[in-house]
Length: 245
Image (cartoon, rainbow, N blue to C red; front, side, top):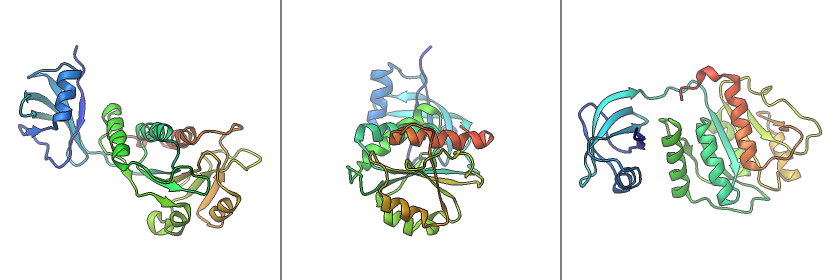
């Protein structure tokens, strides 16, 4: 049985009997890599129109035809946001991919004192997010915010996120705080530091805000991408029935 690929579509209305043009790169992948041909099934999805069963109608013109909707758009009653210091590109790719699979709503790349990388390849990052959604069955692509400093992130926090609690991984804590304890509200924002952690000044700056609280994830020091996955896993466990993925 042939694998039925999922493809993300932008700027196109998905509806019954619609003829949809996909990119040449997408058509090349499904015909040359997956060895599909005319008449074979594919799935197209768009966050506004849901997911649809389709079939390849013309390889040369990159056309597929929509048949029926199999999943409607997702309504998220709560969200989790990861604000993460930029780390090594390879590990940043892992972070982006895995938290997308776990249902992150938005990602904020952060620059801190000990951040070794001060920029993020937005185009490549978006490709990773889209690819992760195609593989895991998500319809909504996570929002990817602009790179900001930790200072600006904190200054604009309440304007951006209201009363959502900010929970950050604090390696300097001498005892573990259960991650699920601060997850009482519907929405949560998780702040993750770089390889060297937060500086003493940054830690004090974070804790000066009433909306912030700190946790230590177990007794081991985790890499940033591992901490991000641990935060998302804890968040999912607090209300698994809200997940529509």
